[in-house]
Image (cartoon, rainbow, N blue to C red; front, side, top):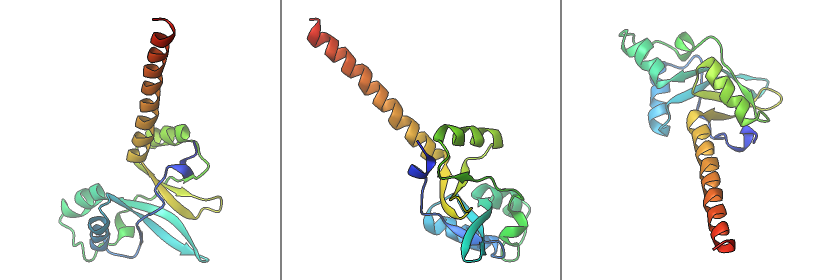
Length: 149
């Protein structure tokens, strides 16, 4: 299954010159643990980073930095890993493991942000597939009982 089918299309974004306080407010308002940092280029939205709730705690709060002065661009990771919407879920899981990340921005063929894939999305997909397999086992058992009493 392509991740374009399971990713969340409602992505909370912020530009790199906004303060980390604004990022924290967005996380609270939308009940998310991360916001995607974007640049707007030629009318397109391109992901350039990600800020997580953990980044805010470790990089800003724990070091007692001024959250009204520090920008998202100051603390975001210098490299962002993205997935194309056509990427298969198994390949996405491998990338998450290799890069030790729980969230990946999803882009279209032109590199424009179209969604976000989270570990929660993958776990939901896997649990649905496991449930389908469990139902198959139950069905096969009932079928055998009907045909071989």
